Image (cartoon, rainbow, N blue to C red; front, side, top):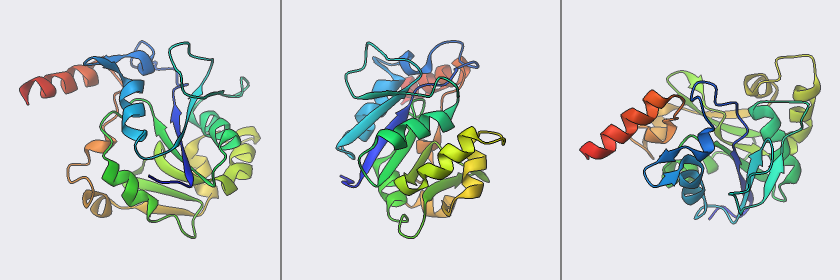
Length: 197
């Protein structure tokens, strides 16, 4: 249990490539959102679901994104504004294979930084990352400023501890935690792999 942190699960995306709401998409018997909730519940006592509009099927606390802004940065802002802990762990609802050991590994690097972000295949993974409540002002400025309003822009403004693949593989050798399901083909591939195992 990471007591000083709130998990913020982001569900407000457009899901354009999926063609339907990712959060409610079934993977086996459970929705993608339910998979992620089940994964993070043993790790965090506080969980917030960041939504574009309230979801009737969710019993956990929900926060709505600022209607004037879209995208994960708006979801992160809503989560940080409503969390009562000094840290949040932001995670997308389309990452159903997160290993607890990865979360614990990332949490170890927080001291002295505003964010802890994995690097996979040379790219930052800001939607499976820790953010300090102290960076809220930067998030708001990034959201309302004249820039790209993106998580990448935010990371350029913060003191970030990037966690390398080698460091991540100590917790998840295949880096399966970073599989995100963006398209129907992604889901079909995962379902096929599960049937073969």
